[in-house]
Image (cartoon, rainbow, N blue to C red):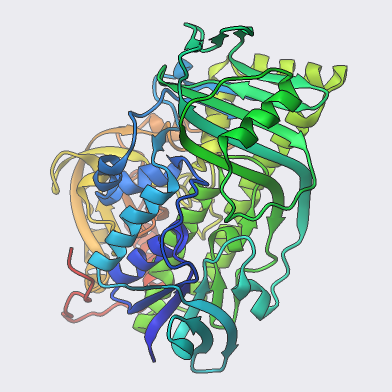
Length: 540
């Protein structure tokens, strides 16, 4: 074997998956067809739940250090409107500016730091699998080669060669329009008004936000008065090569067609074009070959895909690590497909709704936009939509979810005192191992968990406060949860920061012990009644 796992594609998804696998002690080889990191900034930064997860992991600082600008106010485009989350004291959606070339540079260094091997200029051109592993045929700088691993994961984008080689269908819709997004320096003849609009010499005032014309859609806006932000969308069937950089001249020509003005623009900061697709694979796995990221799903809205892609990597990493490590319980790897197809479907719901809101030009469509915009001045629908945009409204239907409303959700933002000290869940090590949080001094539950000490960390803590605003449980009544001093007596938190099991407040010993033992075995394999060494993970 050349590696335990071969990851095809060194974009953000593939590189983060390499990080996750190395943390689980798995040997990883990443193959990328491009010889160097591409400078086309397809994504402008991180947003949504991945930021919360990086914070819990203690990893966020390295991404913040590479960020190109201060965090913007939480005002996001959605369906041809702007969703203003500044109305909320604790917005569920946030963003970190980090253009994709810089993001990939951070992740590349991170993966190599943990021991992953990244080979650029290596294109996968063939693939076959058997009961023992997967063989890939590679075209590289030194000619053709064959490489072998126990598993292969295709993180090779929307035109995935891996997906095609294993015959996974990719049904859906491609919308006949091209979006262009540009950020340039602010030219001398353009100034930003206090309301976010523009004053353009020889043109006049251009209002902040979206403008629809017979030729398409135009928007301008920026959180930085020194930066000019421009967006256009127009009906167009041209199939652009992703490797062909967009130019400022191309953007200005699009603005003339759509808006009918000659808009001065400065030096390019970020230029990208994209076509909207609504596509999702029917399954993420065929035997020993899996898919993640854009190879598995495409969404018809900017800003959604990268969050879902990276969360794919986090969900898959620890599960595949368990399989390679030889301790995965039956069905663990299958849960990756089940859970991430659910998350992708949830994202597809709100991104396709945006298409319906944005593309309509008649009076009925305008009425719909005004109606939805009016609803979004109220806290509850605004919070619900913000959670949906962030991906934090996803609740996996895990066993026991009917017993406690936190089961299947992203772990709530607990403020803890005692062991491990102030700092909430961010003070715990969720990087490679699950955690059992004893919030009520339950010796009976701790005794059960000790049978899994070789795989599960145990922390007894006092609950200082709990913030459930980042948890959207749809129609679940949270009153019974937040009315208590604590949301549960104990929480079993998976490495991907989702709650695998929860004990209700003052839940009887017999019921709680049996349920915890079942959850531990389901997710983390067989327990050990005698002492066993802590299973090896990569030191950091």
